[in-house]
Length: 280
Length: 265
Image 1 (cartoon, rainbow over the protein chains, first blue to last red):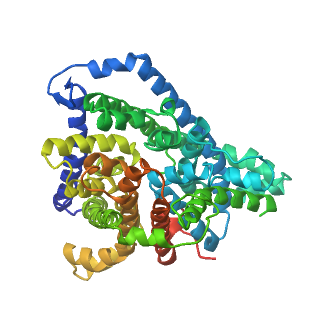
Image 2: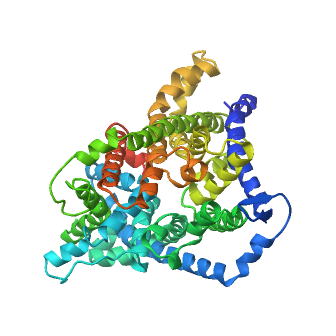
Image 3: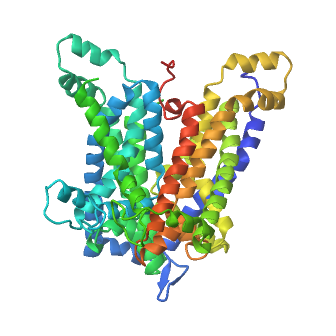
């Protein structure tokens, strides 16, 4: 097998590489070019070189956006991983016939359009159809009320979309975990809860950190929930990119922010793969 | 499995399904209002989804784009995965990473990239631009599933075919392709469902000319919430469950998602 020529391999890989190059790498090149183009008021831009769009990064406007984005995404990532880790661990300990339907459900939620998630959550938190009605019914609250738009609604929404994602990221590592590990801890007299926190969690710390970073990047990428569930002051950088590109017709500034987001995401994901990669 | 552990599993599953349950309930309202539990049961909103020209148009757009994009994704992923696996290309790892990248990066970055690309090329607002963009964006999924399928082929099977005199083409067509067919199909299905649900790229490239269902829902949100949106959401959830359920029923879902192969219990 080793003597075979690799020439047909390159011929075969040529078309997909070309497609990815033209439709994936070239767009980023154009995006980078636009980010340094001169903006003409009225929604257009002309080729040129100016760092005007990047200079806006040092404004308090952008500082607020950045701070808000990082904080919200970090919070959602921590919450999602904190819920997802025990959940995924318990899931992988289930018999296969139980795992499969749960995985189907998780994938269905994960693939759900953000438009639908946003619509669902704003309904869930609304006054007419929301869970506050449930609390009224069981006597916890006096009157149904609306919990959206608001900061907590955004956090809930971001955590919700990151949760199945974090589960899928943790699933390979946890399902490959040696089942004898918790058993050994139990045999040595540890309670199940203690075995979980003192054996399983430390063994998986690399996977947990990797998952935290991936979930952070993922919730940073949420483009609709902050605008559907929050007020303008809760908008993240991703929402502002869309806003600048489509509604403010400022493609250079949108591109500059996209370049910034791209570099941030690449650095974080690259770091995760390089230093925390679980798989070979 | 302690009672506490089971309770935890159920609570998390409950949280995950809560918004969908509420939306499903809302979609059954008799009047054009969002109440949960629904006031009066009616399937009129589901009917509207399939009969109202604008909703049906959006549904047809979504399905057309999703089918074509899934095929494009597989057409890009299959030769790439095969070449990397069969010929152990020197830049194989790099090519594979480039194939993974669209899906790992924040989608809005890809969306801005596609927007500037199609605006430059002059296809901005066209359905073909959405199809090709989705195809590239989602090629990661068939790339991962097909690679997984190729890696699980027993090398001795290939050697046997070669010893019997099968040339490269015959090996690919009669041995490899049938063995990886289920993985190809899974990749196709994943790409299909995700294209169906994709919003930001479709919106940026053709949001004002080719309305897909998610774009239509978003555009209608501005004029107030209607039970039809709930109906659309329910249809999408059911479609996703049907597709992933089929993979789970006939394929090895845990393995596709990265678990080691285990004997069925």
